[in-house]
Length: 462
Ligand code: SAM
Ligand code: SF4
Image 1 (spheres, rainbow, N blue to C red):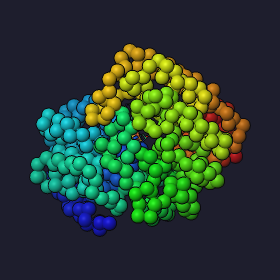
Image 2: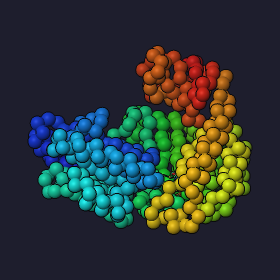
Image 3: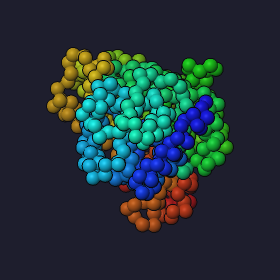
Image 4: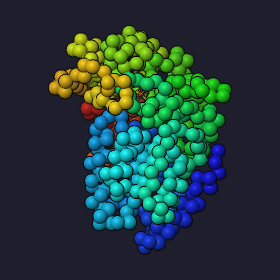
């Protein structure tokens, strides 16, 4: 584990002070995050580094330093970045000392990084997912005036534990339990840009959770591309179910969530750990991707329609009030109307509370991008609309099933729409609005759910 100095924080502090002297003020920084919870957690590390170095946090991209943590899971994420860059360029023309840094998954794609290098000369610093911990050193290099800095590694070299972090909210935190992914679903770019799966050591995870609890965190979200395969490559292998139990045992932690669960690796031991542990939130995100066994095979998901349905039945039998949500891709190459009907069938049978629905996006370098029979755009659009209709109809029918119950809610903030009310999140991830003030923020309180409005409840604190 590196000492703080090995991270180059002292050097970064000196260069930040010198940059501030050139500007004639304390420099400001803004980290913009695209993509998933993993990126959100990485951004907390980036911001933690910047605040520790002497930057102040800015609310928007008018900041002196803008860091964009990119995503590349679907093509529209890439398009969003290029849209942003045009805007940042015009800001930099007005403020030539402005610094622009790009990092994250999209930068791990060699073609994209090359394009930034040659066509976007106003970008000052580019690094990737594997060398995120080199951020202090690389930013210091750039501020020292050594020209543009591009550092990209093909693969990770170490798990570095000690980067400073700035949490988005004081009472909740994500905690990485593993990085990368070994599953190689045929449509997915994640294993190529995040590398092979590496689990953090159990002791390091528990140490972080204890420190967070001491710092006032009551809700933990354990993060991994496939949390269910946690612990495999460790010197002393540990199962995810065991890790979950140990995290729940940390004093001060009141709620534990996790994301994402691959259906093929969800064990009965995990179902029991959820059932037997009240701290584990009654919400499971279980990506389906497709309801057709034929398409699931082509996606390399390694479960079939029947297996998925049987799994959801086992989960519901053990934990009847659990909320199930999912991810579904429409228009995977070769998807026929019959295949799509199978997806609708699973949605009707499982009755998800909600689902993220995606139009299949070919990612260069993945096996699916080279598959024949890419589905025509109009067909995909029409199927996507049908799926969305069904998901929303079932979600609306399912919402409100807890009316009349008293359930604990973690108060997240004031209700922006109605003065005198606060907004809380139930264990099953549904929101509830009820009378209260700012003193409740960050607390878990029992709320009587009185009525449902669309997808949220109106309640009253008990
Ligand atoms: N590891 C997680 C899992 O397996 O569920 C998900 C990671 S991925 C960032 C989130 C979701 O993006 C996936 O569940 C999938 O539905 C979607 N996705 C990934 N690649 C995609 C692609 N090429 N086109 C459309 N959606 C995609
Ligand atoms: Fe991508 Fe599949 Fe890994 Fe999820 S499990 S990150 S979808 S390869």
